[in-house]
Amino acid sequence: MYQSMFQQRSRLLVSGLSVCLLAAIGAGCSTSTSNNNVSSAISCAPPSALPSFPVPQGPPAITGGFAYAVKTSSHKVVWYKVESSGVLTSSGEICAGFQPTFIAANSTRKLAYVTNFSSDTVSAYAIGTDGALASLGSPVPAGNGPASITVDWAHNFVYVTNFDSDTVSVYRIVANGLLELVEHKPTGGGPDAVAINSTGTRAYVANFRADTISTYKINATTGKLEDVTVPNVPLATGLGPNAIAIDPTGSFLYVTNEESNTVSTYSINPTGELAPVPGLPVSTGSGPEGVTLDLSGKFAYVTDGQADTISTYTIDAGGVLTVGPKVAASGDPEGITVDPTGKFVYVVHRDTRDIFVYTINPATGELTFQSSVPL
Image 1: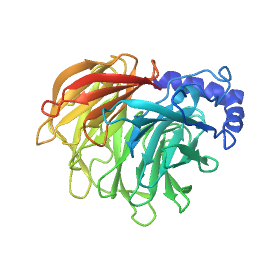
Image 2: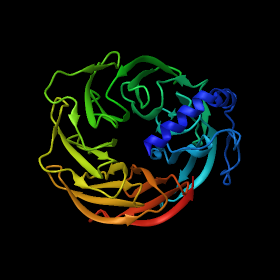
Image 3: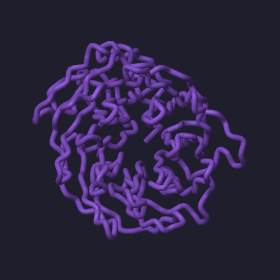
Image 4: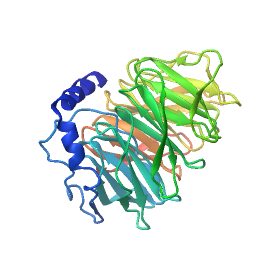
């Protein structure tokens, strides 16, 4: 997936089309809608202006009774009302930069941030009382190819992986919700995912091209990422690590390896350093691209993008995964998340451009398809 993505992206940049599109969909393209039929309500770029190509597509961000997701194919962020049944009802959309990949949102802070892969920017939005998004000024520069984002809401720091420039951009959230750049931290080759531990003292970065996961100490005052001097940093993973999940207790970290079709498991010690859990990485379906855990920490779910399935696992007290049944999920499933109630799993599908909703059996972790909604 990544080879074709970056070959096409290079051609776009050489042609200058990416620059033209930035001007077209920058701060001036912040139109939003709030109705129940919004799948094509606004146009954020001419349909034929640029060819589409696959980039990472993260999971919905579910907060405050709404779900927010990136619509990479049409350069938008869309949002839905989350019904008590778990069903999503389309509510609105707004333009993002070119090829948005990931979103982080927090209803308490009333803020959302989106990485725009081929604009090399991060967009900031305010969340209204009705769940609608409104742009907060122009997008801020990132590195090249921002692929994913995570936010330490407690300490006001934002971390963005830049796949093309092998860096992590660190930002501070200032009083008005805008982002202020702190640094571009060099990391391993092709950083594709970032996560922070529960105390906000360590950051973990999956390096797709380097086949490693890096650990950094977070400076509590500045948010900067500092190298740690411990053995085996960075740690080897499988081939093509591309998604990270930390269990609810903060004791274990899971990384999907897209090119070796596995999940690697690591324990997190009290200071935040990683150690491989004994045993071989656990198998997935072909092309794993997303991973999440249920709120009890007893079950894990992996989207198998090339196999069109979701792999399910049980987790023992030592963090070890045991393979369970696979669930059909046609249409290149990618971003996956469990909602804050722990009752539902939401999966973004790249090819069919929709979101599947599954219910979780609390006793067995089994997923049952419930509904879908256009993305």
